[in-house]
Length: 129
Image (cartoon, rainbow, N blue to C red; front, side, top):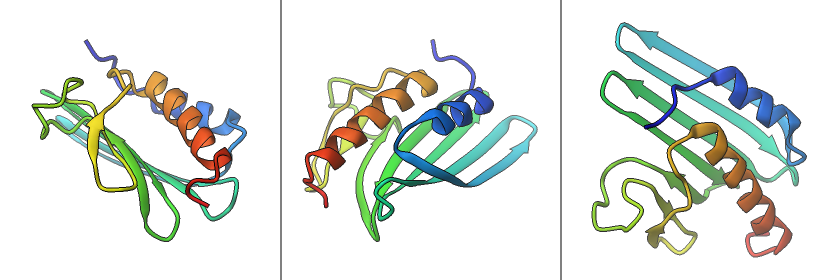
């Protein structure tokens, strides 16, 4: 069972990250039974940005973490549209356009820790520089 979204915990984790240089924008749109949240961050090196989207309804919690330069690089998400992937609904969109299994598990804060670690690895390997 997924935990409810704790936006302040997400922001706190970003503020403590060594690769986040600035939380650029936080959007919150809440109505009756739905919440939409978007966070954009500048990363180090400066050409990278991270965008996070969280959609919480009475029935589901969908979220994504997308790394950008001027174009999208990679994305992790749990939108339920690839049921044949072993880690459904969690999946990863790689830089080649492949959609594969993901290490995400359904807890947004813990998954963000994993994503920040993976982004650090990607940047340090210079694969996307």
